[in-house]
Structures are given as structure tokens and as C-alpha cells.
Image 1: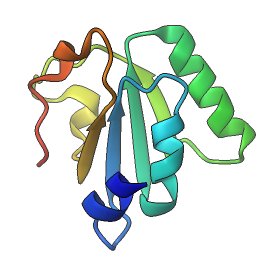
Image 2 (image 1 turned 30 degrees about the vertical axis):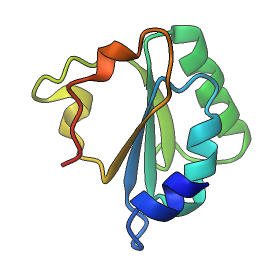
Image 3 (image 1 turned 90 degrees about the vertical axis):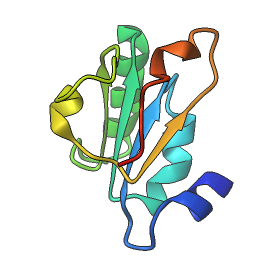
Image 4 (image 1 turned 30 degrees about the horizontal axis):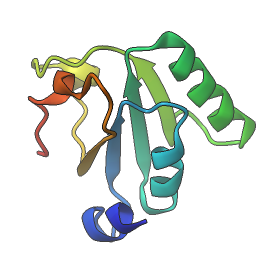
Length: 102
């Protein structure tokens, strides 16, 4: 996947996937990232994502999803920092306009 090859550092950095759906983008990034956190506002999608991750034997420290509406406020996601943020286009993608790569 072009995103993983271009954006993630050689040291297997951390990634945030917004609008995760069922985790297809996260799955593509997984071999290139140390940690991936998926975010969605739909509890059912977060549950499916986490179940699929668990069924593959991947620990929550390596990949997990959370149900939250990000607002760009200090301390969101426990203050985690990410090397790359991937936003999947959706009809409501305006929710994530304030995210920045730090």
C-alpha cells in the first residue's frame, strides 16, 4: 500500500486510522507500524474491528479501535502521538479537519 511505504518511518512508527469501517486500511498498514489505533463514531464498527484484530491474534497494544468523536482537543486518545494519520473518505469526513501530524 502506497501510504504505508511512503509515510511510516523505517522504525515502524505509530498510526491513527480515522473512519475505520471494518479495518481494511489498518490491516494494510499493520506490517509497517508498531501500533495502530483505529477511530470511528460507530460502536458496531469498532466492535467488528476489535473482534477481527483479536481473531488474528493481534494484541490491543499493537492494534485496537476506539469509539470516539475526535474534536482536536488536548488530551484526546490519552494524549497519544502518531507518526501518520490516515482518514478514510466518508460522507461525514469533516469531523477530522483539525487533526495534525505531530
